[in-house]
Amino acid sequence: MIEVENLHKHFGSKVAVDGVSFTVKKGEVLGFLGPNGAGKSTTMRMVTGFLPPTQGRVTIGGADIEANEIEAKSKIGYLPEAAPLYSDMTVEGFLRFAAEMRRVPANEITAAVNKAIETTFLEPVRHQSVDTLSKGYRHRTCFAQSIIHDPEVLILDEPTDGLDPNQKQEIRQLIRRMGETKAIIFSTHILEEVEASCTRAIIIDRGRVIADGTPAELMAKASNAGIVTLRARGLAGSGIKAELEKLDVVASVETIASDENGITARITPAKGRADKLSTAVFGVCKDKNLSVEELRVEEGRLDLLFREITKTDADK
Amino acid sequence: MDAFITLILEFAIPTLIVSAIFVAILFYVLPREVRTIFKRELKSYFTSPIAYVLFVVFLGISGTLSFFFTGVLEGGEADLFLPYFQYLPWYLVLIAPAVGMRLWSEEQRLGTLELMLTMPLAPWHAILGKFLAAGVVLFAMLVLSFPIVWTMNFLGDPDNGVIMAGFVATFFVALCFLAVTSVISAITRSQLVALLVSVALCLMLWLGGLPHLSELIMNLKGGWLVFWPILKLVNGLGVMPHFTELAKGVLGLRDIVFFLSFITFCLFATSVAIRLKRA
Ligand SMILES: Nc1ncnc2c1ncn2[C@@H]1O[C@H](COP(=O)(O)OP(=O)(O)OP(=O)(O)O)[C@@H](O)[C@H]1O
Ligand SMILES: [Mg+2]
Image 1 (cartoon, chains in turn cyan, green):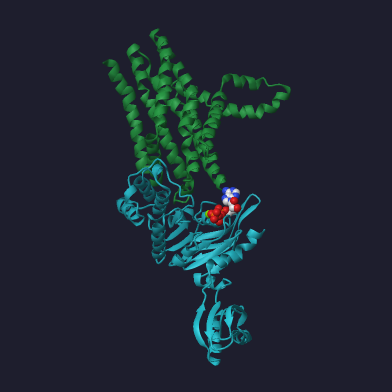
Image 2 (spheres, chains in turn red, brown):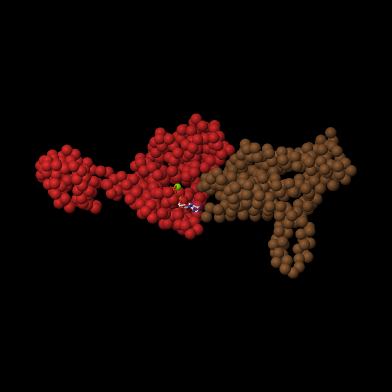
């Protein structure tokens, strides 16, 4: 549905987006991660046709966002980062306006507005002026605007920003549910949302894609991914350690506690061998007749990966 | 009673016909997007106090103005109602930008431009929809100044054709000023800046057509000649001669074409300004 090819954006001499490419198919939810100023919003603005790219191409469902502007835009629902609203309208009035502008047929507008209000829990403020809404409700009103025409493509720039924990949860589930039938891109700084809602995520840093994969694949790239914690008894700790270090899938063994009769250790896998580590460790224990009291494989942590691959930025 | 019937025939009916034609065009000729934007924009004029404030200001000014010229009327020289219209554009230099200043600058300040420009509509839909809404506000202002005409007709026996021509010419000038304001408001997110710059430009536009300026250009000498192209341009764009012709009751095609092309050009310039703003 969404195809982005080699997108660049320069603001004067500043390069905000520097060759970003990706595709999102129907049924996919793509998460955008990246430090502040990485170029997430700028990329989304080009995908939605708000900003013209300096170089590169965006097609939405086969329609080029520049050459075939109106057709491409009619397939998109967009929640801008700032969640802008016309301050002189009521929530319902604004949604009606949005529905008309998004080409909802006149006789279906009321139903569309009601559905959007229900989905985003706006009933209590339905007739309130946009001007007097709290931040979270403003955000939800703008979100409602983006889904009012049931678009095939949804671009959401920090959709859960400013929402309370319950609402965050609701919106995540909503995104996940809508993702089954739409192509969705959303950006976030909350890494749990990637696991909760995305089928795929990319990490952008200084205008470039530096990681791309399913949440599981990304987590596997974190430095802690596959570390095995072992507590075993039946042999002197130093002996067990020596045995473990002989394995070629082991990079290092860090002793946490050790005595004459056992060890607790964190075993880091050799590069690219994480998947073999636990079996190998278990094999050693069996060979030496150790009793395994604990054997735990750590899942990679996204926040660690995020910090590791975007660290150079902070160091500079 | 006679005056009353005259007023209905010569003012109310033409006004209604023009309004009906406008509504028909809006509903049957223009695309739905233009209509939607027009409605939203018009509504927001009347949900905020600005339309009312401007109405009061404008009616106050035009009422006071007419007061000065009714004296002339009582003398029996009905044609001299013309001076009333000669002064009206001076006030429109202020009023039209005040009506139009929010058109695009507000959109930028609120950030809603990002919504508007990612909706499936051509930029001219939005530009025209907004322009028409502001135009209707100005139209309503002129219509609301009818008590002046009423008074004229009770006090004397003016040539209503000339008065009507004066209103038509005034409305065209107002639309030109509005179109200029549309361009400026697309350039800045500050309504105040939009207002000030537009007032300055409208003033130039109005004064540019002063007969004195044409004379001045003819008499340029020596080093001053470098200003010739600029002065000539300002003079050529000056709306005053076109206004004067129309207001005399001469429905000259040339003048109408001038006004319409000037407005079209400005609306096009607005779209260019919006495009450049994004790049
Ligand atoms: N209109 C503009 N003019 C100049 N520079 C801009 C403009 N818009 C964005 N930038 C710059 O482009 C870079 C990317 O900004 P962008 O808003 O895309 O970041 P982001 O990834 O969305 O960050 P955040 O997480 O803070 O939302 C930033 O350095 C920003 O200063
Ligand atoms: Mg951003």
